[in-house]
Image (cartoon, rainbow, N blue to C red; front, side):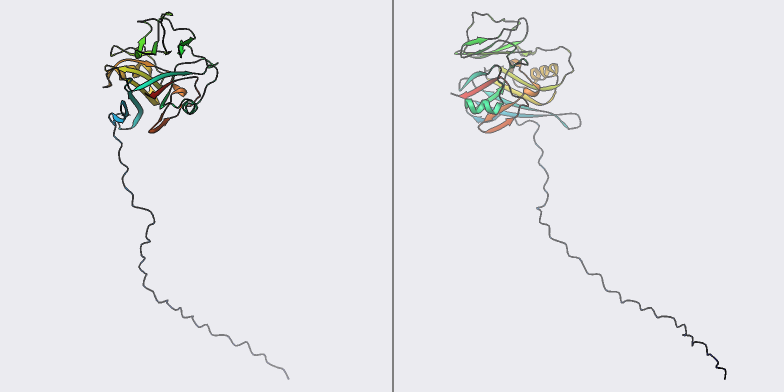
Length: 272
């Protein structure tokens, strides 16, 4: 007997019920406490600190030069020293330059500042006198000279007052150019090279000023004009070696403007 196959029973297509999830309220997030202290505005440094006494006869001053937009373009560090309370010397190590820190460690000086120009062989390009012994040759018709003897410390122009081999000093150092003479700007040659600068000068009261412009924004003519017009009271001022040689160490209180090169000659200052 034939068997009739019944078709498979179709599963009715029943639409699935989609369950709508119950919305939960969004929890309130609590602020995470900060472990950092609240920010405080950075104090604005004064453009000019004014003369600050460090020790009897020793004053410090910092000047920040700003452009027309208020951006700093140069940083000047000045020390003003009464030579009646401090002794000045010249250190010289021909052919064997040393970092300023080494000069300070070996001499125990309170202040060490780079000296005059030198050759590739690390010899002074001008005359230099240490402990009464002269070496090198004097500049003729240009430059200036720092002299140290029982009469004190002087800065003079070699064009106005040339070196006389009959002169004797305890210490002396030559460099160039003169930047201030008799209170007036002494270098007015047009130049365009800016560099770090080191200057030694004497004011109307006989105090010695050590001046460093460590950002390298001055040409020599600009620096000459600035020093003559500033309120430093400079009578004479001489440019020393600059660029990578510019540097100063003050041992107490400690301050350092590092030179980028070792130097064979330095100016040393000791308390009396």
